[in-house]
Every structure is written in structure tokens, then in C-alpha cells.
Length: 254
Image 1 (cartoon, rainbow, N blue to C red):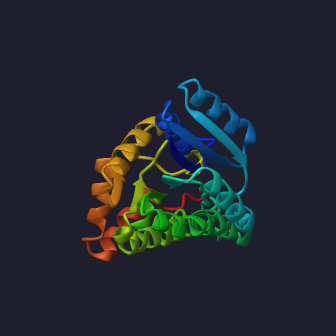
Image 2 (image 1 turned 90 degrees about the vertical axis):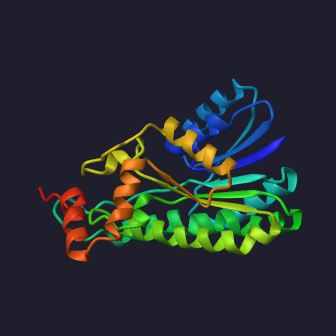
């Protein structure tokens, strides 16, 4: 059986990916904080005759996470790991800075959570000369949104990490894909009070991601109108690009 580990599997893209991969030939290893939602996702996967194991854990507990993943891999050698767990932080409508607590929560989850998920697996994958890694970044990694500075910083960090891993691990037969979603309907996107152009469903996002991973694409970026627009911003004079971003994703003061 193909062993697939997904973090943040209880909601949004993570849950949709679990259901998309569910089949009689896959064993899904699902990690998340919300045990009730996680069990419900696993139940849906089992309806498709997929083996589904659930583990309630917070990826910010990095030592416990590394220990757990090492134990899982020893019993079920991982073929594909998808680092999906993530949180966001939004500038309050009053315009004040993000709280230090919010900053730490985002960095601990979105950056250290990814590093702690992959660190115990990389040498094991290299020994087996086989496997795939997918890291969920964001289109916000390409050009920061004024509404969410720390979130953008965290996604830029894992973008760089994933790109470096791909170059390092290619010789060991390991594929690495960095995923750059735009707005995907979820509890995370619901926190944005700005416009959310071209927002898609988690199921549509999962279809795109799975297809990209199967092709071992270095970059999986979507939806097209938005990713093209973000890429274009990098070619514009900074004063114009900044003006556009403030209009689209500026802080809306109450």
C-alpha cells in the first residue's frame, strides 16, 4: 500500500486531499489538532476502502511531532508527505500591529511545523531512494499582502525551503513540490476581510495538487487568473505594484 501522511487533515485542503487520495491501495496517515473533525474525515476515507489512521497532535509541539512521525515511518514507511497544517494572522481593522502571540503562532505552525514534519523523514527517504514531499505555501509568498505580513513571511520561508530541498534531494530520487494556492474556501480564508478573487473549493484545489504531485512539478500554482496577476506584480514598478496590493488587500480600518 502507498503510505501518505497529511498534516492539517481535518479541514480545508488537507481534508479534501485525504478524500481525494482515499482508495483501497492507500494508507492515509492523518494528523491534526481537531480530533472530532479528523475522525469524520477518516470515516469518509474508509468508505472508499482506504486504510486511515488518525493522530491528534499540534504541529507546534515539534519534539512530540518528530517522535510521532519517526514511529509512524518505522511501521509504515512514508511514500508521500504533504505539509499542509497552517494558520493565518490578519492585521486588525483598527490598523494596529499583529500581536506577538499571533506572530509566534503563525511562525511556529507554518514554518517550524513544516520543518519538524520533514526533519525526521528526510534521511529515511534518502536511504530508501524513494518518496515525495509536498509543501503547501501560498501565492502570498510571491508578493506580500499588506493585510497579513507575518502569514506572507511564513509562506515565503517554506517556499525557499521547499525549493532548496528539491535541488538537494533530486539525486536521491525524491520529488519535492511547493504548492501555491490562491484563495481556497476554508476556515482560514474566512478570516480574510479583504476581497477574495477567484476563490475555489477545497475539492478543486485537491484535484490540482494531486495532478501536480503525480507529475512531480516543482511549482503547483493556482488559480490561473490570480497566479498570473501575482507574477505580473513582480514585473511592475514597485510604486504601482504596492498601490495595487493596497487597493486589493490593504487594511480596512473600522
